[in-house]
Image 1: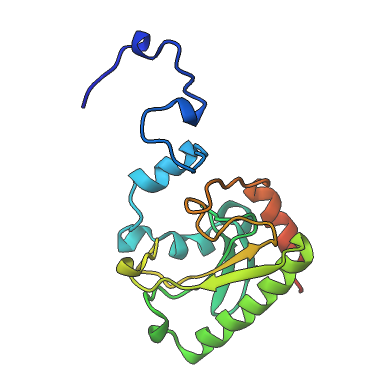
Image 2: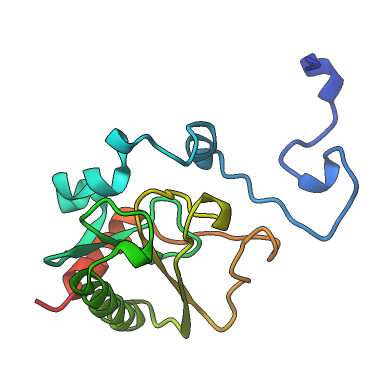
Length: 187
């Protein structure tokens, strides 16, 4: 790895992506250094440090949980694609949908429907991406604990993957979004 002295970058605006080295392209860069923890620490925790097993043990505010059911719960994604990006997780540590009990499947479905209604009311979104990545090879961030994504979308929103859509900004803080969704959740 080459190290550079500060004088080698004199005159280059490092906050303007068009001035950086590389081949010019149509992409704008949105620097998100907070995601470095997600990248460096790896996406696959060992079985004793699963964030989806740990979350229900914490307060709802600490773990970003918006609703709890008997077999599953709903929380905000710590690394969201959009504001209001929710995850529905069974309490049980299972990796794939086919391992879920009929009760877990039913409650995941019910919580997903309620989440869609609440997020639509709260955020005035126009649609949703809903899905599960099953296994590491399929892109599951936490492959060993089943979770379903609910991503709100707006008519003038970017594409599902912000990298493909050039730029993505999240206009709301996670704590604010969690509180708003939790307060709107039916009792």
